[in-house]
Length: 603
Image 1 (cartoon, helix red, strand yellow):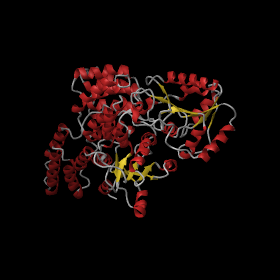
Image 2 (cartoon, one colour; image 1 turned 45 degrees about the horizontal axis):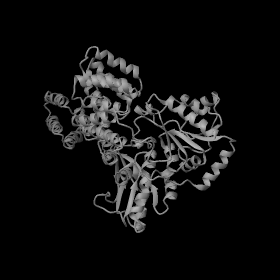
Image 3 (cartoon, rainbow, N blue to C red; image 1 turned 45 degrees about the vertical axis):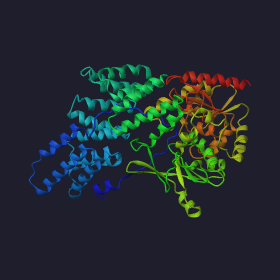
Image 4 (cartoon, rainbow, N blue to C red; image 1 turned 90 degrees about the vertical axis):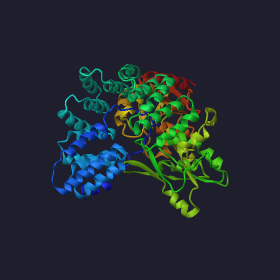
């Protein structure tokens, strides 16, 4: 298959659903724009300098000049179309691949852009500007080692380049090579102390580590140098919010939004604003603003393919309607937002019908919990770099009973049914574990001997980027693991053999049940219900336990918006919460849990 044919048919695989709630997006600090006026002018000069006499090549140059003119006015589809015209005749035209890459990147088609940049660099390896453009995109897509090599290639030709050096620091930061990143910035700041970009990126290195308070110094220096620097103001907001200054964070976000340089930045800032509003308890505003999660400019926004119109709660009554609810994001989010499903069932009434599409491993649990509904799995693929979700079981339903009248994303239900904290039902849980499996696991747990049986979760299966600051090193859990009178049960999915071996070496034995903790979720839910207690941070496992009414203690970060300005999780009113009080506050939370466990055992 030719390079162009591969480009036109490219699709990217779909990653596993994340098991942790959406976190506050960070402005990475990467700077530069492949479609900036300077970049396009540079390409225009290169084309103007090509004095080739071959008629076909002259036509290609004129076509690409027209493509650059389209880019200047934001017509990225038109620019891409002209670049493709050139490539149809000459697949080895490096400038055409470069122009096509810029158009695809600006249009949000990142997988296609990546392929086009790679082709451009392969054909014209001497053009280090392509290497820099590709390096920025690779960093955005998480290909950090590749990004580092490309940016180093650029800096070898352009030593001391501010944008390139800054972006190298960002890539090192994202690889958690914090000291190296700081050294790179320190050397250049000594030469360019008045550049606000460098101070902003230095601040992001600290926030990435959870060091919010010292990071403020660097964001404020960036803003002193450039009061209109929207990224620095946005990043300062993300530092102020977990420090307890939600109002200041909101003010910074509102001030930053007009200065967003790209549609992606605007969407990212609006996402942070929605989460801040929810965290402040301004629920109606916050849940309505949270619709930005579906903005195509958000890298992980889901595009839904459904053979029905989306429900408009302002104009459509649900009574008697056939409604399809589609889960989104990860398992933890399906647990949180699934709490509104009973409201929808009540709203459609006996003459209506509710269909629920959830993660396949949860179908049995949801069907048992909502017997009047019809539950099936959703599927997702990446098409042109965008996560696209569809509901195959509804095709069979439509043939037998007729299709849905309307559909709605699961998280959008809160904007309709949860206007204030008082709207959250006071209940143990809304999902029902399998009673036979609960009985089975109760018997298995009894074989472990006497003691208070505690199920443990301690980390996310995804610890990339800023996610790592939301979890502690396992060795900090020692006070909990060694609580007298407790029997510890491992509920943590993934390969945790090293953690378990370390615990046993320290004298803490943890029993691992003979099931697949990642995939046998109906058993995990039943086991959680059979235990005396489940403990952990806000990941899939603790949310499943809480949603089914299992006794749960949840450790939360200082910027967890799910508390909705309360001291608990209104989504799960029976859950007991333990605050870290800061990203460095895990030892305090661990000691508080141990003290509470000692009290429980004493009872």
